[in-house]
Image (tube, rainbow, N blue to C red; front, side):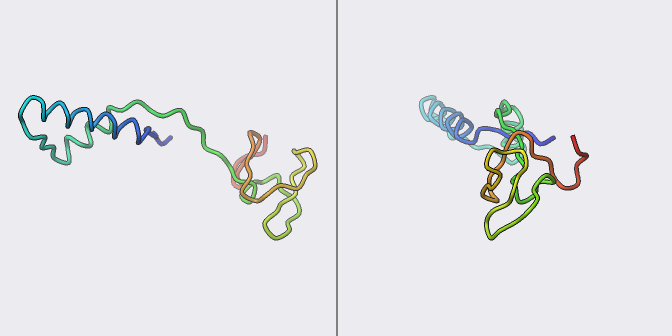
Length: 94
């Protein structure tokens, strides 16, 4: 599974490091290995992968920009919509 980090939090962290280096009177110079190490050190963001309705195995009928989902009240949803019950076409049915 991929690890996602909070980019804003990382930028804030790096800005703090840069500010601290200025206060201490040295120039921040990081090579690629150091940057990679810092990125890997960041905590994972709380994210979940979603399946858009246009990719979901449960969708039935289609209209331009819409799909019919038997799992939703009303049935018709925007093809970019997603829900907790979505599953990609190639995944095993629940």
